[in-house]
Length: 316
Image (cartoon, rainbow, N blue to C red; front, side, top):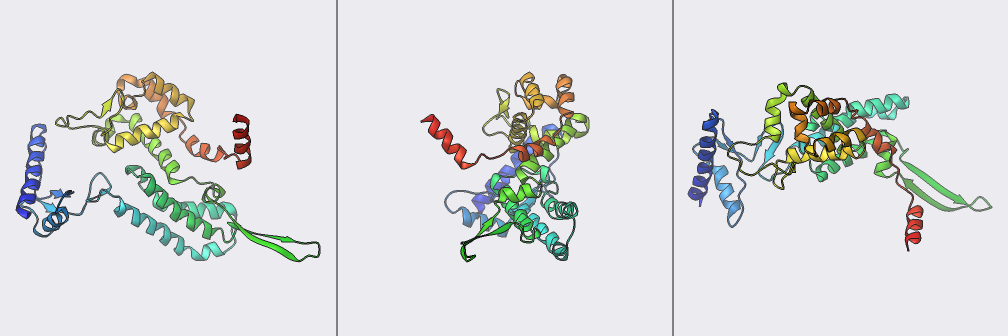
């Protein structure tokens, strides 16, 4: 079993080396790191044997760093997720005495944002996060934000009769969304998008200085026959970075008439923003105010349930 699996891994390493040769890229076998992701019958046993015995070239690893993130054989971001949560908690606990003291609201917010909230956002734009991973990080910092509010996140409600006797008592707790807006912050989904769009703008402003990262994140090797774009939009199996670019800018275009106009002129193909042939559109994109992404989150209000009920009754 091991010999067969080992041979398959070594053949894939050889194929990679042959594909790189015409492009004058030499594969350093001494630094080669392979993360096997095997499926099917006896895959666990075969993977275990690979970790134990290895191959002739490079190392067999469970995780390896590539373009910033730590890649895992499970295709998960747990290696990045756990430390970020830990950093937030450590930053909060180091200031445990501060939260108990009385400070101005501006000072408290600044300290929380700069020490706790941003701990999970370090180099955030360099990663491709799933919605579940972002929600997991949001839960962590929101829980800490509740503690920093020192009881303000809950309100005790009591009702008394005419004689002053308490007849009803309940505790009302702020929802996560209310806590987020209380602090004037945004979920990582929103804040991360704002940071990435600002990142894209820097690439467009200085494209010559970002050729490597543009090629690594949105490009393709000559042997990759699968197209990344179909009709100007990402293909079903396109790179996740490319899909994230389109998702970010499509969401931004919903609240930015200027970007929506740019999108129409480039036929929805956002990769043209990195092309010198579309200099006018690129210049206008660079000048867009990305802060409206955060402001839009705080200006959108959820209608009360009663208004939704009234609308349904009108429709019926």
